Length: 129
Ligand SMILES: Nc1ncnc2c1ncn2[C@@H]1O[C@H](COP(=O)(O)OP(=O)(O)OP(=O)(O)O)[C@@H](O)[C@H]1O
Ligand SMILES: [Mg+2]
Image (cartoon, rainbow, N blue to C red; front, side, top):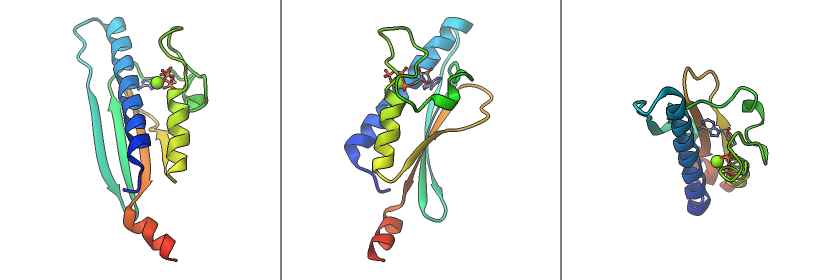
């Protein structure tokens, strides 16, 4: 896929840290025996895209926050824990790579963030005109 390694690494780390926080929050609610899972999946989206999904079975994105989750300084975390900039930075980094990040709708439990990036061949075809 057509991506820059450093922004991509930062984005994936931020998403995994958010997933870990969400699992921790659910564990506080449901008890320490709750076993959280984080799943990363890369799938081809024909004809020209790759999708990278980071999913978890944590507390889920609060409905009040979900529509604004990529805006700066939107956070449900206690002061000192979250500043609410991780996802807004990820949004900007993906846009700079001509990609996109969104939140998968209608999750039964937990949350899933989806990154979409063009395949290298597709980008080169556009560049070649
Ligand atoms: N995997 C997730 N599960 C549930 N809620 C999430 C998840 N990822 C993000 N959120 C929600 O979106 C909010 C904004 O996320 P964002 O990464 O922008 O900020 P933050 O994690 O609060 O702080 P920062 O990333 O700056 O440390 C979080 O506070 C949380 O409410
Ligand atoms: Mg974050």
